[in-house]
Every structure is written in structure tokens, then in C-alpha cells.
Amino acid sequence: METTAVETKKKDPRAEDVFRISPHRIKINPENIRDIDPKTEENQHLKKTIIKHGVRRVLLLKANPNFGIDGDTHEFICVDGNRRLTMTMEAIADGTPIETVRATIKKRLSDEESLLSMFIDNDAVPLNPMEKAKGVHQLIDVFGWDTNKVAEELGESVSTIKKLY
View 1 (cartoon, rainbow, N blue to C red):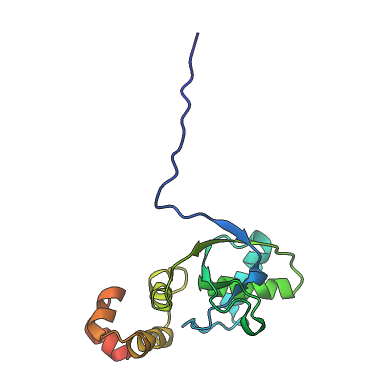
View 2 (view 1 turned 60 degrees about the vertical axis):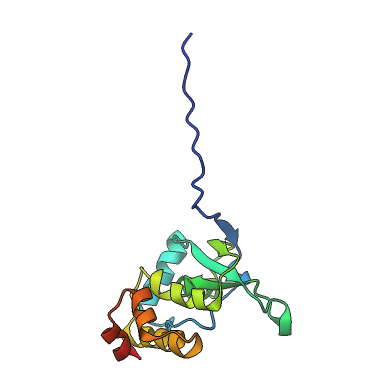
């Protein structure tokens, strides 16, 4: 009698759960350092690919602390993927039936960590100098970081950070 080995894949303990969430439940991050103009050629191209193929990359979300306050109906805030979410909502407004997007949810993500991730996780379209400067100003002015800490965390030189500040 021949036996067959059954391979079982253990879930990577570092892997995060991916959920399907209605984009209507997600708020564009009000602290987003990226300026998103839906009318640019680049964003219109993104919208066309979303309409044809859906949102391919997983969004990173955090819980919205203001959910239910003053009529805020968004349960989550987008940390990484604000441009994708914006163009998804544009596609929906144009009549494309998109019911869900894939997302991971960070349960404990401070505003400081959220801002930092906008630099670190931003691998699709690089931040322009104005967007970087906006983020550097927030890290220094709002969170009290010094230029050395900003440079170290972002992998930039101190002189670059000083120019952006």
C-alpha cells in the first residue's frame, strides 16, 4: 500500500489577517501627507486599473477613534493606501460596483506610528519633496522628534531632514 505525505502549511506568525471590507467603512486619513488629486493622469490610470482588475494591494487600516461621534460613519482610517482608496471611491461614484477591498487592520497604531508608516510603507509612488516636508514637519512639530531621530527612522541624512524642515 502506497502512502502519500500530506503537506500542511503553518501560518506565518508574522502574517496579518486580511479582511474584505466595504470601502464605505473606510475614511481617507485626514493626516495624510500625500496630496491626492483624482484628476491627474497618474490617478486616472490607477482608477482605470481598479475598474478593470480591482484593488490589488492590501490597504492598511486602523480603528477610527471618532467612529459614531458627530455622525462619523467610518469605522476605519486608511493608513497605507489612501490614493488607492480615493480612486476606488471615484470608481464607485462613476458607477463601478466595488463592494469590498482587501485590508489588514492594526489594532494599536498611534497617530505617530501612522505618520511614520506613510514614509516607510510608501513603495508604490514615492513621496514628492513637498509631501516629505509636510510629514517631517508633523514628526518634529506635533510629535516632538528631533532631526536626528527623523533622519534615523526615515533612513535619510540629517542634512536632508534639515532641508525638508
